[in-house]
Image 1: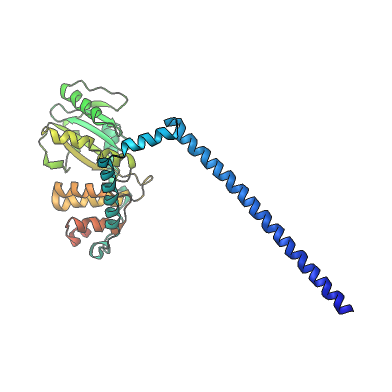
Image 2: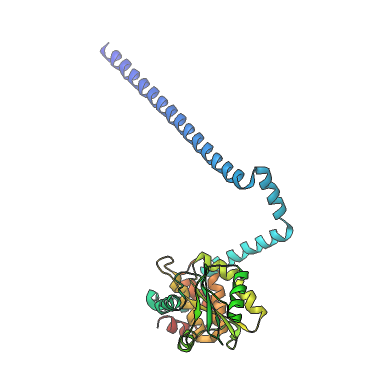
Length: 302
């Protein structure tokens, strides 16, 4: 009799625990459902705000999408995606002959360039640009990724001597010594060293505004159309913002040191297409451009 009562008690306790577990599970499911409902409503509200504030309604967004997604635009989008995928694969390509010998460059290597940009033109950030008339030595600084029209106006102002300091940047006149030091050892795009007007571009290869400024070809379009206007690019990495920018800057500088202006701008074009740099990625670019592995490593590590 005693054994039967004990067994009955044990079964009762087990049933109670089972019901407690069921109740807890139900509470958890209800709480989870309520939480996800709140999250969904929040996200949906934010999405609605993001659509209706700039466009008025979701229907307007659909109209804009349909108007934009032409065959030509879709082709361009697909080509850009294919290029980005190819660039990512290229960055991951092993190039042991070069990579194994590369060392991380010093962040202080471009301090002189930063001081030059600031002391001569008052440029402290990137992209920074200086339009210079080499005959009169008048300059107009353009601090930022301004559109092509702004640079055309700056060029006109240094050509006719009317350049003034404004929101875009300082204006002034360089001494002969300052101009000579500024252009000592630089690489002219397309070797246009005899141009009357020179645009000096100070840039960080990983700065998103610099990339947009460079890849939009705002300066290149001007330079390509006029033999009297030249472009000079100067690396000015800012490691505090973009820690790996010096890796790319060193690669560009070494390409120029080894094979001249053409190699300098070829490496620059490739570097501007990268989202970040590693020693392996720099080696891959050097290898793709046909730079001698040992010479490149010797320059990179110097």
